[in-house]
Image (cartoon, rainbow, N blue to C red; front, side, top):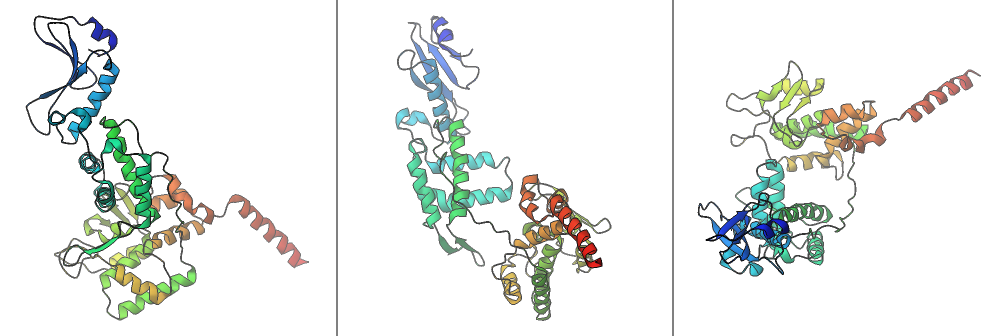
Length: 402
């Protein structure tokens, strides 16, 4: 039945304790004793235990109305979902820490989020959220608590530089971008807390994010020439040819670094100038190869024992860590703070400036939403500008004839 004031009022006592269960909230029920006492309860299992447990919420009447009892049942279910048995301590003293909530969030997110997204979330949680507020009770978090946490991440209070293995290194920085991403994750965690009944509101709402400076950096024709010259010099000097080829491929296709470095020959169809990527940031997609990119792949050596287009010189995996080589190429070409990812922006800007529609550019880049491509709209020559060019050219011809 649906537990409500009317339905609870209609329940009558039997010869022994009788339980009535709610049809919407699992485990929420009313026990009716032989003496007619009506008590709200919650039945549940902790973890993978097959033995159900039951906890008393309160007797029907003030203050335990059906609605208030339902809210408390939802809160207790949230505590159970975090792996804590609320029967071990009085319900009003049971706490769920932010760290416990993160573990529950990770468990649920693993079923639908991409590995790369999960890795980014895990880094935000382990490097920022847990060190700063991991031990705090989710129920008592306030908006000032979140604001203080947000400002601390921006100020770099969780910044670190440590070795993670023989060749690994973790450089963790703060800053406005990191703070914004971490706030997004914390907001999603608080949404889960509401769904689990741990709290009724989201304390991250209303926290204003930091404004970020746009990084739309494109290469000019002269800079592209210098980049080509720099790549040639590095190649002549014996720099890792696979890393240099990967940089050229990024320049010629506009694909993401992860897509290029993880490229397998089995995905490449040179006959149709296509690369079928089984997964990417926006899911499976096809990467269209221009003539120059196709020629680059046709001239790449293939190794019988390696499936990778850009194999590593050491080990059996693909080439990784091309940052140092890129820095050498960038500095030699005099490109300033131009990032490797900016090659993707340059590819897009070249396409738009050449007259390609934003729809086509979005397809080339693998954008799933049109608004993502809109950042390049200002590079396209609009119809008004085209009309102005045509009219002024026509008038200029007549003036010249005079």
